[in-house]
Image 1 (tube, rainbow, N blue to C red):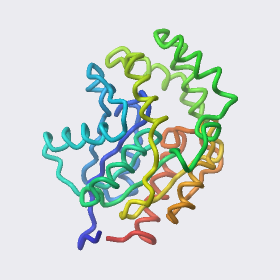
Image 2: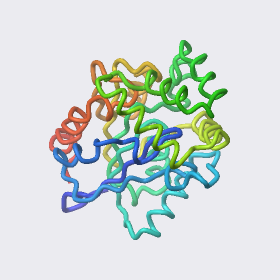
Image 3: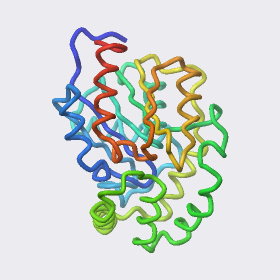
Length: 259
């Protein structure tokens, strides 16, 4: 689809069990590099401001929930989406089902069937740690420390980040049942047979300890879209190097997908 003017509205979608506040200062740093007059940090059902609601067990239902929330808030399409992990699956499905509503996709460290297998989507060496988090989900300190270890390679802000994450969990806790439903939705999701029609940029982390970065390679190669890989960041790429993400998106907008 084509637009005659450069859009400056973006919607950000986080991943499994995470919410708007987990972006940290990334939205502000993104806006320093990328044209962004307005950024909407949209939570999935069961997370953040919607933590008391029941998470759907399908990505398609997550799309419908988000569309309704944005419509209620008078945030009108078409949207440019920055989405990571489970949020990126939601973004892809949204673009596939409602192509007129999505102008661009920036997908961060995501994976999906049939493009990647289960061992690529979650590295087997981390299965015991993930199982421990699930079993001890009510132990906030243990869960958040483990999540940080699995998702973040930049550790200079670890103490402050873990304190912030504990505060987020205390004020908007994601229940174990909702976490399970989101995991079911992610595990069941299958990529569309053909790529969405909008311009797309795939970003991945070469040192992602949670999801093998080959998943992003499979996606970008299969759909013949732009792919950039960070050399040292972990799964939470916006946390580890927000500056790099912003500059990659800005460069892509200028070279690959001008509107």
